[in-house]
Length: 186
Length: 190
Image 1 (cartoon, rainbow over the protein chains, first blue to last red):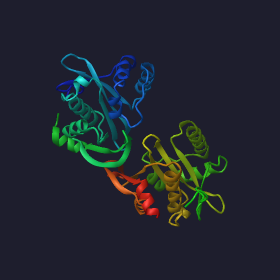
Image 2: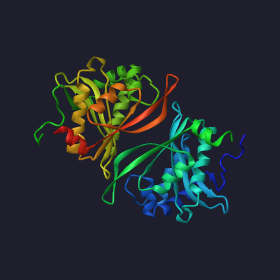
Image 3: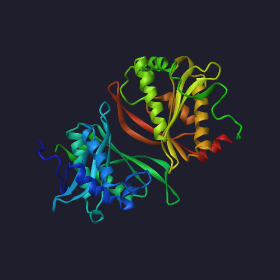
Image 4: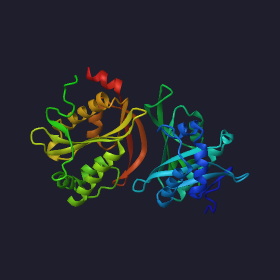
């Protein structure tokens, strides 16, 4: 039995009060690139209060698992990661991740957080697979997802229009058996 | 096709609205057809009473009023205005010009007569020539061969295969995404 499911090599996942996480997310979204990497809806500014209400709703919902990503070195919150849209009868769900603190990009924190949440998804929630989508203007994320074990499953052509260009939405997935083969019995 | 070519009317069917008096009983009957429900939905098949169906249709109409990011039509026979299915554009992203498409013929006696094909053709024309969307996505279970055949024959191509995303009858099935671009639709329509 792994007694510390939520701890990785570089980061740990924690659940924060809606108010404190919302303040951070509102700051992160001031960086429009953060919003554009995360969501295909138009980037906009939302107040901490609005985001707080959204987190409150999520925390009242048993099927939503949203975590803050804390760096082990200094316990700072640098991002968010969550499982969403769990279909219990099919044991499939989506995962989404964002590192709001730019100083933390390219250090392996995102890949580590993804590995932690996959272990939680497969060994505690007993899901069969985890799905994500990512935009083709985000090669850093794609590389991280590949490292975490995700397999390319296709692309929706020209799904996004940004900066006058069409971009694809890529789908990736990982099956429990693939995760087990790569990670063994943890 | 021109400005005066009807958007909502074909030779067999029309794209209509909800009839809150008559439709609930029909929707309730369809929901007892588990074969149909498993083709149309990922959620576990679960029959609805007429009362439940009526409430669902009322909620649907209310959400369509509020959200503005979906267009739902009831497919009706041209002759008798009888409800036989539904055709929907959902998750419309106006800034990106993309949406998801769903279509079902609930009335078993109206299947394989070309009603679904004609309704889909009307829906595509509406999406591309009236809403000016750039692309559509259809999400279809690997086992739904009639739908795969219909969407492919209307020009959709397989873009994504979410491996083993579903479990039914004790086995895993893939979930497929099919895509159609406005340019491809125009090319096919010529």
